[in-house]
Length: 207
Image 1: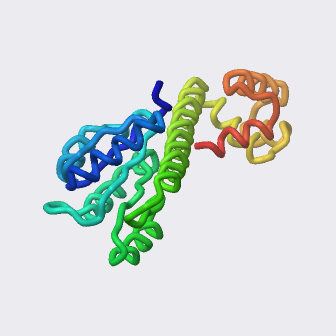
Image 2 (image 1 turned 30 degrees about the vertical axis):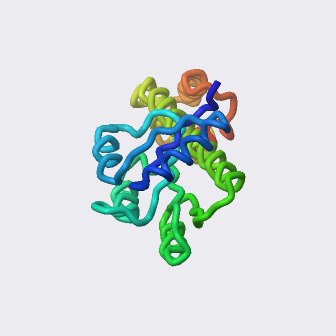
């Protein structure tokens, strides 16, 4: 059974794709090969909200047509970029370029020839990062749904309470009774799934 996550192998060298595919199969990792950056980009453009499951890309720097670096720059512009960690495969002469790419947001790079164990370890860390990015996106969606379930007045009260204002000051600012604030507060806590102001603030910080 394959481990969770998909590795996109983007390299114009058939032998490299075949050997990497074999290596990943031996480690129970699912991989999908692409013979060019253009081929991968054609598919990635169809991802409206990202790949949808944990993944990473093994991307060769030097390829005919669109280079690996050019593809990386396009991926960086996508709102779902954090869901797709990129590991560059580079020759010795391209190490400075790969290092620069890491500074600009690539997950890592591996210099050819590389250690199988070192590469797989990087891939597994990249898949973990991708899974966390997807989980964070889901938490943000859940938060937005909870907020959408609040009335306009409840949203106003929530912001004041989360800012640390006591019930009396909230009541004075909104021109309502303290008891009404307490009722709103109880409903807000219930709808947001929290039991304290601290939890409410932490929840909002996920957005």
